[in-house]
Length: 419
Image (cartoon, rainbow, N blue to C red):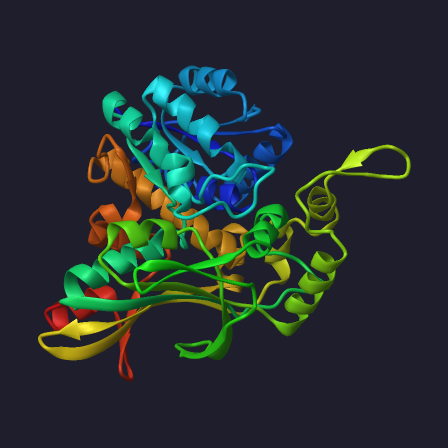
């Protein structure tokens, strides 16, 4: 029987997930979308029909759900008969949704690490603070839980696994580079949930260097990279989810994450941080109302999903990997290029949401096929990378490999140079 799918969330990534599930619904049963605002879920469903995304006639239904309520989430999983739950709601929901999956036996997929609303940047490794505490419970229950299955984390984890398995005898360093060279028509906006976006950059920057956690400040270290398609780009050393599993699961002494920021973004971010608008802690107004500055900021900034129609340019995200192969030093860049305008034409999405949503659906398809239905909790680098990357290429996210001056599609590289 084809598994029913429950998508939790109704933002930009959920929009992509719904379209990609619809485009592949010969392998799924009914598709359900749930959030606190069912009107947003219904709007996604209408866009699926408007774009003609359904591969075959099928059921799409919207539901109201507070996913922090474990009992309500469990009831919805049972009522919809969902066997796969794709959690693309707030990062605050992960543990509640995972618990509901444990109680129903449904497979669980998310795209980002769990966070507590009143805590920013907990001690590393972050996964050990919450998700990994449920490893044993998943194994006992036989529940498949695949963590961090977006692009970063997610695809870059698969790139790291691929590099270690096929391109190197010894890996000395992995530098994950995330560049958005796109442009939109807003004065200032974030490409995904503003609350999550800003929380990433207000705490300590943790990186894995010389096999230990190293602390830095945001925007303290910068580096220029010469990358395919987007050219020379400046990126800053940043803390990120995938470092906290890769450092534990792969034998690599140095793993860092670099993200590109415009000077305009840095200037606005700095002002907002200095005046307290990025604080997750509540404050009281002169009228006696208690508010959280970061939530107020989220309310007034553009919805990331609304950026798609005016977005142009491309993203480049990948892993620069250095090490040794057959006794010789080697450097390989494994990467993806994504086009904002192409994504908007296809499904009405911008590339940041597209690159996060497609991998989650690829993971769901691999669970449905049995390839990734491992009946335990894993991070992406613990799973075979080739089936995942091949499937994503079919779905719109191709993987390229640059070595020296040559760029080759991943599957062509396997055939032509015997990797």
